[in-house]
Image (cartoon, rainbow, N blue to C red):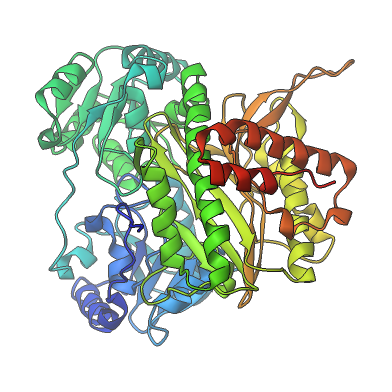
Length: 609
């Protein structure tokens, strides 16, 4: 009945191939006089999702998560992952070759300081590491008495004999009715910001920033509508856009040539070197620009002005058209999710559904909106113990049948031309245990605390993160991921610079869209996460306030499982928030669904009282 078109469930047999590959890499490193190599999950643009020809970490280690890095030495190999991927990494890698290290406990730099042999030469590819990253790695090598050595071409590429070709997804113009501002106006605003920091030109290495600035979308990456491209935007004059001409229809090329010089990618480094040789000041974002760009400018005699790419902040603050599109996309997506939840409630108690069945069903409901362009990330569909794997990806090998008495966690999203969605719901299959209800309610209390937060203009996500954790902390519990991330407008589902995270100091601005997703995970048993997307908006005025106040508008529309709530643990204000939210879901989504689903929705959104 259901099928998935935008995601697959096969797991490549990389694990079996890793011993021979690691051995070949060590031989190549020895040939080049190197004692080791850092292999990050990265490409020259620092994308989260990579084209197949840039998946070096997966190829050498078997680990397929969207974040991580390996350090491979002559007699030892270590894979560093964050809390989202600890369990996945241990399942995917060959434990006789790789040791898995939690990056939150031991960052790579700390490990290097204590484990690199004195005198060792550790190689790295300057195109795969940011300027800031290389500075930290170099300092760690110095502390260990070792040397960090930039190597081009990448030693791993020399042994990757079946490497896929680069992608050639077609580029499309993103209509101004969705973008809300034409590209010429955006480029003008960007040039004003470049002049403010007294730079002669900005190098744009993020394809998401290029997409936003030039109002284009592409198909080079899975789940994110981006074209792999660089740009050089001068403070005055005509920008240059570097992308493969085979991706451009004549009409698209013509539209872009109205804005910029459209060049082949091979011209990028030469043009940047020429700019530097003319003693121009070049703005590079040290947190996203590759170290190779810094070296190129410096060696050509140019001056680097370090600082954030202004496009990143501009892109994060959505305009009225983007906000309207986000609301429309969330309402449309909510209809699909509600249809799925009603279907799941009917079918799951029979004991025949699998995790893959659920992924395929939800994607099908989204496709039936006739507006879906793709999923915004691989759906996380985890039943029972698999729900405790924060970024679990179901495969044919791991697929579980969903049984009564379990919790089921599904985290998914869609890409629509007017917005990007991301939602997580945890549902009970049959009566939940008292512990499940108690811990779910603590997560819900944290979710509500973020949703109801009122905070002064200029407050950062780090100052709000504790709001979501306080009720878990009171019971000695926590979760090992951030509370929320930024979300793009038909762009990346994970967007900077702001997030609700204990280390993020970026101010939250009106117009930013973020996720609100606290959770709790009991290894080997179950996982809980409740995620909605929220929009930063102006709060109601408070008499006597010294500062402007902001709050969040919840955009996501789907029921939260009332069967998992222990009402006695909620305050009256929390219960009132949930009832009001459910009333909104009922009002907005009810007209979009069939009669049977509407009947289910009435019950699912009934008052707690």
